[in-house]
Length: 347
Image (cartoon, rainbow, N blue to C red; front, side):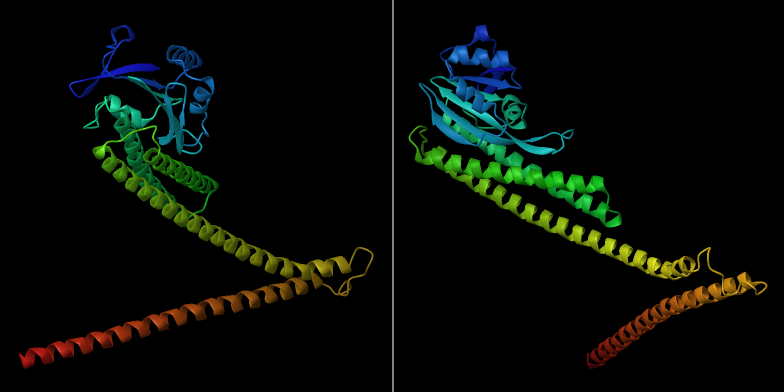
């Protein structure tokens, strides 16, 4: 969709193509564009086809380049899509500055450009294209910071659920958030390099006010990079800890299965040794099966009683330790009460 904007009394206003005032600056906002719309922009404003393809490439990094009679800038902004496998990701926005017109092209819809059209941003001057570009980068940084906080909250809630029971769905959600943080870190670093190039190159000229604003945007960008790195390290450590817990639980289950297997090996060995072609040692004794079953039951009862005694002894130790702790706490309380009474007497 292509929308034409012009600024009237400091406010952005939609303008039809036939009603465009050529004397005033024009913003061509192209979002969720189709092939026909990109071809229209290419033919109308004489833009190189390779630059159009670069702006529509989802993996294109931030950069700045000079065309025939225009300046091309590509920066990355964050996008949230709850239906996607990775809910938080980044997309490139292509910005073309040509004479009295600035063109923004994005293959999807993004919140950063929505805010400009809704007049949510103050002190925006469409006549100052360098300042307008920095305003877009500033809005992208604010969205990065907001999405990073949301990622941190979501990871914390998922961690609380994983403490109760670890399931595959929760692990996949954590992996999706980890991928989002990697995308954010890469995009923020490429935007930082673009800011540095904009300050040093002669393609875009900033005045004194714009230079101060660019420094502030660079500080916000560094803060977002540090936050993304910190959250990424925390998430990596959490995933490592939960993988250790999972492997530990698996080891406990395998240990129990190994004990059961060892217990079952003895009767299996006996039954396999005395097959159908061998006479049983108690075959002539009447009621020998009862004797064998009684022996087996006695053996099992001895093992169970031994295990129960161990469990009870551990519980008794815990209770005694708790009593010792409570006794020590009571002694401390009594000593503190005595001190308070002595202080009262002194007063």
